[in-house]
View 1 (cartoon, rainbow over the protein chains, first blue to last red):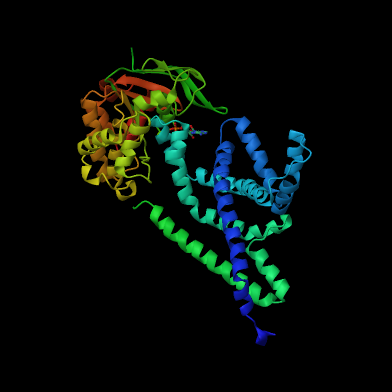
View 2: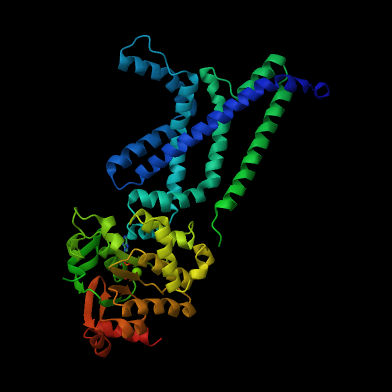
Length: 229
Length: 244
Ligand SMILES: Nc1ncnc2c1ncn2[C@@H]1O[C@H](COP(=O)(O)OP(=O)(O)O)[C@@H](O)[C@H]1O
Ligand SMILES: [Mg+2]
């Protein structure tokens, strides 16, 4: 079978694959930004001295981390319209569409994972740094934003990236709500044209190149944000 | 009115009592040295002053305000009390100047220009103006501690707290830090210093407090303390640190 490789199939499918890739990248970036922002808030809540913040955040994180992503996506897509209908009483209420519901599902799901990464990052900042910030008169938010988070994120860059790559690969799960990401596009073409080997080899190569570029970029970023010593 | 007044302050970690009924005073312009064996509660005592350590019993008045009271605005109070830590605790992701500017801008509301001017004057004073653009990690321990003192002074504090400022330093760097502290003391700064540098105590301290197992065992004038400490525990401690 290896004698009749047909790589033209890739060329013909390029526009379609490109569209899928843009979808994957877009969803990854948006969910990463949303997940990191929400995850940071959740991490701060989990580390709070107030139980009313700590407990709900802990429950949320443990709940989502014990749920498969595919279920969250599914759940969001089908349950949100029902909830909206219930609240507004409008029996014709529409959902927010597959893309937005997937984006929200990914963001909420990733936030739980980012929360745990960021929590560890915050805890890696020595307690003396917080005391020094407080001793200067900085309030909680000033100390957190100026002193703690910059150092926490600096320590976390590699693992945040790893989580981003996992997220990028997980975007293929959007097929359950009828969306097509890069992997989805590749397998559709593969099935349609009966060119499984070529398409999956190509997809693997693309994933490899992207991950390689991403880690290269992160190394450079990391050396740039490490203060000189 | 005393600048800092401890009235029967007690603190527990669970069932372990770190501070036992501590009572003492620091008047304006006074230099107090706090010494005692490791684990005796010196850091805890000094960190109560600016509310970094909460306590459960007693009262602590700083500049007329009760530190433990719910109504006290702690950030506001802390901004007036400088603190220097054993491990310097400069912010490693900021340049030396940015370390000095941060709280001036964020807490005192000074403009960046005004802050930088103040910072540069203080760096000049501690002999580090040439290092203004460097990062903490590029400086020696002694230099970092002098930057930390300058950072605290940038807030125009009414009192300064020092928690073993020289004990993380290589011996050859201790004096450059002590010199800055001596100068501050001689200018009339109110200071509470946890230190085992008895030379410093002899030179500028007004009183020496000796702590052991969470208790203030001895609270004496410098002359009395170095002349004839009343308690046996203080005598033992002194002979240990002076004869090695
Ligand atoms: N967070 C804490 N939890 C429990 N015990 C503590 C804590 N911090 C300090 N201690 C204990 O309190 C005692 C006094 O500590 P500290 O004030 O740091 O002493 P010093 O500065 O004199 O060496 C020590 O026995 C120490 O182990
Ligand atoms: Mg100590």
